Image 1 (cartoon, rainbow, N blue to C red):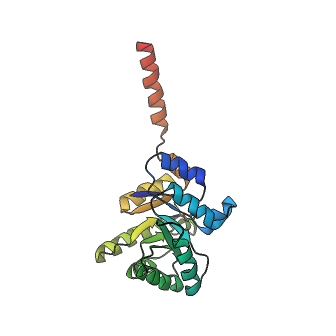
Image 2: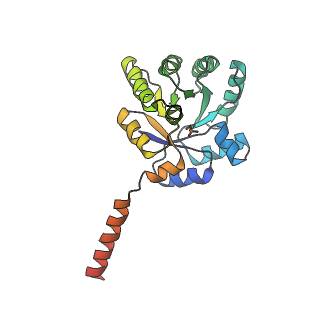
Length: 214
Ligand code: G3P
């Protein structure tokens, strides 16, 4: 399972990149707005740190607007993936970008038929939002299983990217369900290599070593 970080914060991206396990980055308008920086400049700076796919979202909601913005975003760097919403206009844009050789990430996916249609339109990535489904009393993981099965049934190459990850258990379940990618907030990435028994076990090894060998 590829690991992306879900942030527009450069320090967080650099820290996870330094761990040697970062495959890509997802951003969205909320994440870049939170940084208080220029939208395009921040995307360009992220692409200077990470060579893997960097998702750059459009804010237009009509087909023509999405195409215009998406083409501009795609010029920022060769690893930009244009992110468009799972709407009818987004579906049209997905097909048109695919025909132009521009990779897409179809975001805000909340049900499997959105995933079926965007795969038919050639989406590079589909982004089901697990946590937000859990927030409204549904089970987001079911959507990951549904998309995995549908894509496997028909040999679609679209990658299932689990988004809106809130805690490590989501990640374990995504990996077991066969998600291709998980995009994870910095706080949860830090939890991935952490366990209290690792810490206490290491402290005991070191104190035993010191007692015996000085
Ligand atoms: O990339 C966006 C997605 O991961 C959103 O997460 O926590 O705002 O639902 P969240």
